[in-house]
Amino acid sequence: MSATIMSLAQTQAFLDSEFPQMQAGGRAYHLEAVGPLSARMRLEAHERFLRPGATVSGPAMMALADYALYAAILANIGPVALAVTTNLTFNFLRKPASGDLMAECRLLKLGRRLAVGEVAITSVGHEDIVCHATGTYSIPPR
Image (cartoon, rainbow, N blue to C red):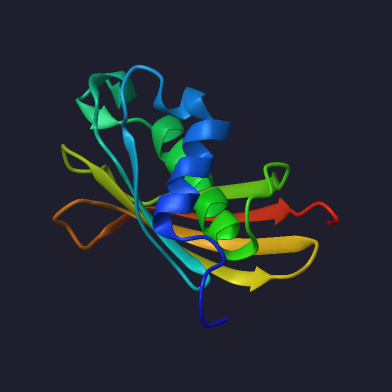
């Protein structure tokens, strides 16, 4: 695949219109890039995402990974709101540093009915992966 079907702006506009609840309380998820079989999304470390110890919580990292996968899939198949998560697996590798997180998503398979991808989450400004996720999505028939 050499190009996306939806641009960065189109993908973000679709996410904003179909899932406004993801930005409830103020924009925190920032889709920074989409590409062939890929996406990059940043999570601002708002206080609502922190756990004791002032680090981003596991559930916040899980939402970031799922949302980044969804964005990558949409950018590559078009505006299909009913593409749904069927499986997510997470490995929390280390405590994130204070601050924003970055999710780098890569789709490993993008078929007509199934998409499989992986997400590496890092603390912005650090190279070490803090969470690695894999996910599978069901894509509805067109």
